[in-house]
Image (cartoon, rainbow, N blue to C red; front, side, top):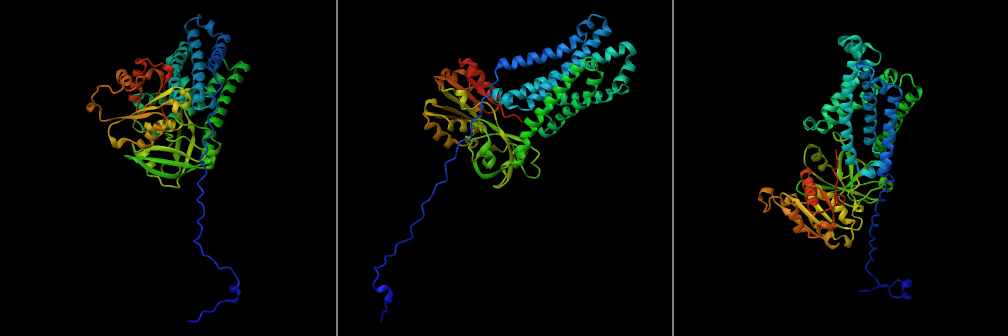
Length: 476
């Protein structure tokens, strides 16, 4: 066989052939932690001073317009005076309740959204009571001059602005009654929420009679403009703080990038988006999540973050516990979701360098898992994980790995209560036996309400200071 050599190659060095050099695998850049929360500068003294000044202004208006004097000028005048004071206080309390649901950052980061919602409910009950006094006193005062029948006719429509005030009172009554715990539990959250929104309508339609018929506002320009200014200020707070933040989340939605089964009917959902770069948040907090999907977009659900948030992602661990959560656990990658802020004040900062004890129930493991991720070995975290069966556990291996790396440990308590060896697994004696240095630790509880209350009660009985016991509810 004759072989022909290209003359152009004859004088060249012998070529050596190598396997293609693989391109280096460049790992993705490490996630950057989300900017930590800016602490509120408000103090209890600040809050007390503002409330005292507010109360003095309201009662002062009533007093300078003869409220105190009328109390001693006969029954008719006394009832008129009570009507004026109760009306002013009803509106004043309603404005405070709106401030709380307006979620101003300074208050939310000082007290936490769950406490603000509790106070909102208390103020709502107080407002309902004051409104009942206002209506009863006003009807009695009017009847002293014109009789009961004419008083009822006048106050339900014949007198200008009173028809709307009557409608507003009925709406407030519906909202107050539907918010009673025994009645509220009979409604779905969405039904109750939209009924609750009638309170805004009630305030709006009742405002006219305050300005034009109220004896403290109708003839006093300073008092009237003060009152109008207070309402405008609260409205502005609602627009910019409450609805403004919601609108911002709607305009810049996040997208589901990962869904993973992590337990029985439980999934971990990761969401990402550019808007995370500008948010503030920390482990232990929760967000309101609203999937942009038919049938779900109008429902907002609170879910705790199950990993320390970063500028790249937020992870939620969600258990299928009903129709709404079932739909969310069935979402697919790529689905857009509206995620409102992180909320909450129970973060690793509450430890202040102390050792930590976490008591977890069920899917309450989510915020604890995120917080343990943020701890250091000096915290020596101990986690007591309570579930009714092994299949109810989520993230156990991840939690054990994180705790061990921080000189901590995880203890699991599995089984229905009737099958346990102890009558009360969270009694002070049991807790002290499991955690001998309990009194030196900060206790954080996350789980069902009954468990939270039991642990709080037992921790106090064991000698843990109240200020070192923390729990936060992700209210819906």
